[in-house]
Length: 207
Image 1 (cartoon, rainbow, N blue to C red):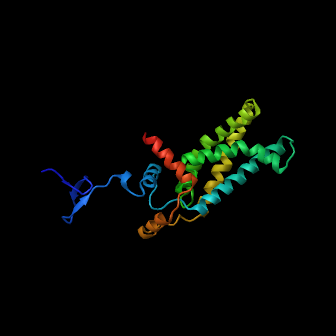
Image 2 (cartoon, helix red, strand yellow; image 1 turned 135 degrees about the vertical axis):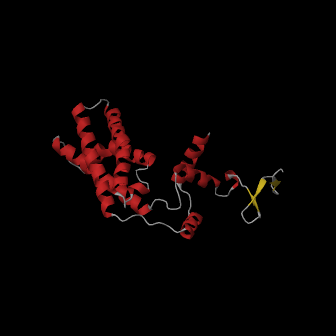
Image 3 (cartoon, one colour; image 1 turned 120 degrees about the vertical axis):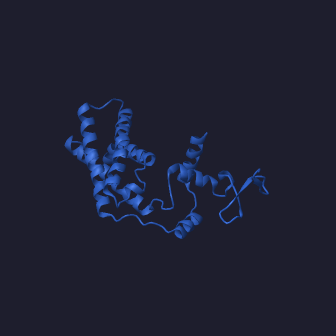
């Protein structure tokens, strides 16, 4: 027996209550693009907490600046705000780029589970710090000595993963939204620049 067809020409199935259920393609839903991007990112009804993301970002920035400041002092270089920022800038770019790509600011990194937070930080470090070293090398026109690379990798691994794990240990688990709260948040949510970028990246992957 051929399936029943709805008013829009799409096939219909029978639900548990015996009533017809029309199948709607994802691209026909009003929230299609947001839904596709969310599914590709593996999100559910409990998205990342913006306040915790801001705290992580501020802490990462502070630790990277401190790392740069200590390095300048050890090398007898002037210690000023502008010089310290310039020294840390390649690592800041590498870290935040890696964090955005590898979930360094996702729910796993936001507390409640020290192990998950440490893993999220380790993944971000594994790409972010080598990327920072590469950016520094390009900017200065030469590859730093092996000793600098080893120290940078070792120090940042201890500092970045350590502070992230410590924060997670004293931070309660992120709030879990009820279905009604999640639905209200999705309804009220407005897409910004990063949401649009994520949508474009999601669609590009599908092509």
